[in-house]
Image 1: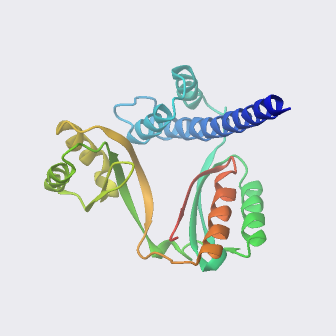
Image 2: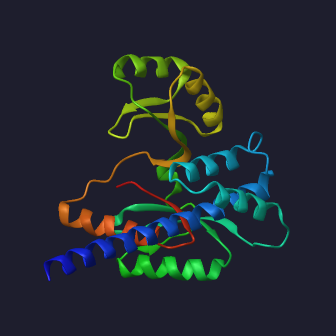
Amino acid sequence: MSGHSKWSTIKHKKEATDHQRGRIFTKLVRAITVAVRDGGPDIDSNFKLRLAVEKARQVNMPKVNIDRAIEKGTGTGEHGFMEAVYEGFGPGNMAVIVEVLTDNKNRTVSELKKIFEKNRGSLGQSGSVLFLFDKKGRLVVEKKAAADEQMLKLIDIGVDDVLETEAGICVLTPANRLDEVKSKVEAEGFLVKEAQLVYLAKNSLDLDQAARVKAENFLDELDDLDDVQEVYSNL
C-alpha cells in the first residue's frame, strides 16, 4: 500500500504540474499572438513580441509552439483576443489590477466578478485603483558574486531603483525606457533573466496572517483564469 500511495502522490503532483504548465503556455500563446497582430512578426522591431517570446523561453516553451503562435498572429480573423485592464478591491480592501486577453469580455467580467464577490471584494470602475500604482519597466538580472559592485554599475546606467532579491537584482525603469535599459544592462555583460512592464503599488498594504492567506488565495484564484495574463496588488 505504501508504494501504491507514493506512486499515486507522484502521479497527482505530475498531473498538477502538467496542468499548470499547459495553462501558462495557453496564456503565453495568446500574448504572442496579440503582440504579432499589434506590431508585426519581426521580433527585432516588435518590443512587445520580444518580451512575450522571452517570457515563453523562460518557462521552456518549445520553439515550435512559439513559431505557431507567431504564425497565428499573422493571420486575419483567426483570433479575436482583446486586451483589457480591470480594477477592484479584494479581501482586506486590497487594491487589485488584472490584465486580461479575452475573446469574450462578457464571460471574463462575469468570471472576475464571481471571484471578487466570493472573496468579499468588488470589481471597480476604470480608474478606481489605478492611481494607487505606477507603471514601470522591471528587469530581473542574474546576481554576480560581487553584488554590491554590480548594483553600482546598474545604477550608473540610469535607472529608477535597484534592489537585491532572492531571484536576482531587480532593476526598475520608466516604462518607456525598458527596452533601452535592457540593452544597456546586457551591454555591461549582465544576464537579464526577466523583462516586463508591471504595475507597482505606490504604498504597500499590511495584513495580519489570516487576512494575508485569504488575500493570497484570492490572487491565486484570479491568476488561474485562462483569460488573465497578470495580476497586481498592493499586498
